[in-house]
Image 1 (cartoon, rainbow, N blue to C red):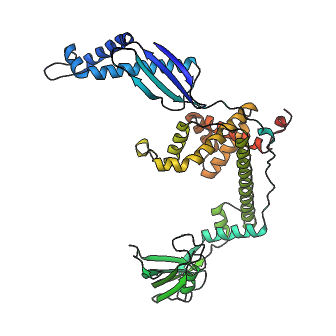
Image 2 (cartoon, one colour):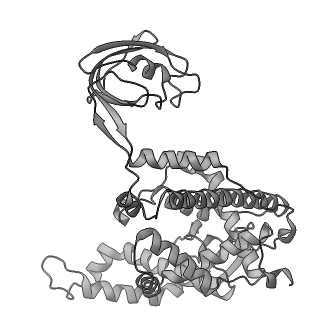
Image 3 (cartoon, rainbow, N blue to C red):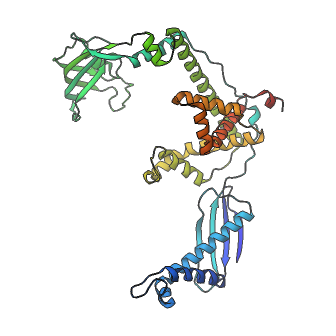
Length: 419
């Protein structure tokens, strides 16, 4: 047997293998013995089927299995000796076996190419300062109040800010009559829908009234099929409901976990500030990554790309049987973003290793505490669960990569600054 590894590309290694026919004798006989013990044929008890009958019926299958096992062992041994770690299944690209001359084949495996990232310590990109305005805080407060509001029936004509409930009778778009949905009911919060003309036509309507509304969809309507088109709606109004905001009392504040309105607005301000900071940092990190990628080009194995796309489209699958393979169209459409994401992770992993960045216990506890607060669970119980399940290692690596992302945009601990 001979085997030679060749560098086909930065991400592909080809193993050229030859196997003398004589080398298959022992594995073939071993496999034949296993078949003889397991095979059951009509007229023979298990383990008593004559060797000649097994060879006649299963000889080719036994040979294929023997060859496969021999090839797999050779490939694994050669990769181990060469310290090569494949990132996907091996692929046989050439196979010759006439059962007399030596078996000759070529096997390809994909690997992560070695990278040596330069310039990551001084990208020139930093995170800009952020600030929130009183208007933003008030808008978030109004949004929260609306979220906690309820609607109730009122015996009057509809006004802006009311919810109008009704049924579609007829819909015509650009002169073409549309098929109505099975459920013809609509609920429209006047002044908040994507079709201001429809809302305007409902102002002043009363329950029991039939309305004909003519309007034109905005040019920037969220559904591009309707942008700029004329519309004629005939609807029956079944109910007018007024929005009733929550009472700002002790019971409400206890329900949302604050002391009073001032405390509520303080929490909202902190949340908005954190959102803005995170958005600014993410933008800066992505800009830095793009700059580093441009300065340090490297290839990504197709197996990595495929695996990430497969994970992406199956992230909500409940079990393995619910998972599907990506189509060619999905791979083509999602590959550019997948390549960028894989490069980003490899760069940050390189930075973390080069700078010896690690997640401190304080960082781990801080993240676990935030998760415990978000899910309303006990901190120690959550921490023990992460330890026992092994997820704590994944969390540490996630925080380690986060430190690397901070590093490339100039966010560094004092010890790192003095290296």
